[in-house]
Image (cartoon, rainbow, N blue to C red; front, top):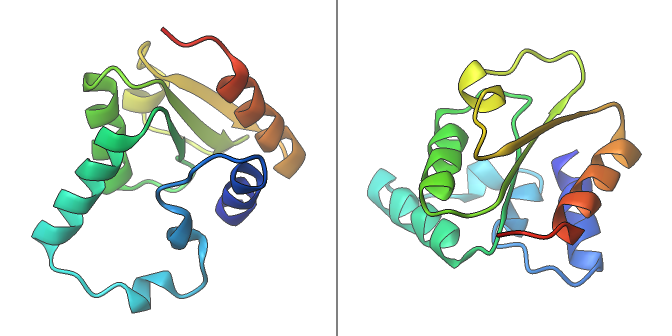
Length: 120
C-alpha cells in the first residue's frame, strides 16, 4: 500500500520526501547510523507541508515523527487498514486526522480529500 500511495502522489505532482522508502529492499540498502537517521527524518518533517503516515504496522519511529509533525503544526493524516488495531495515542489525537481504508482505492481517495482540504 505504501508504494501505491507514493506512486499516486508523485503522479499528481506532489513531492514525496520519503519516496525512496517505497522501493523494495530499502532497509538492506540504507546503511546509516542512528544519529544520521534521526537528523534526516526530522529535516524531512521540517521541510514537509503535510505528513501522510500509514500506521497499520506499529512503529516507534513513525509515532515519533507524527508527534513531531503535530508539535510543528503540520497537517497530519494517519491511515490504517480497516480492522487493524491502532494505538489510542494515534486514534485519539485531535490534532491529526485518523482514517481507515478498505482497499487501495479507498486509501487513495482519502489521501486526495486530505490533500485538497483547506489547512490552517
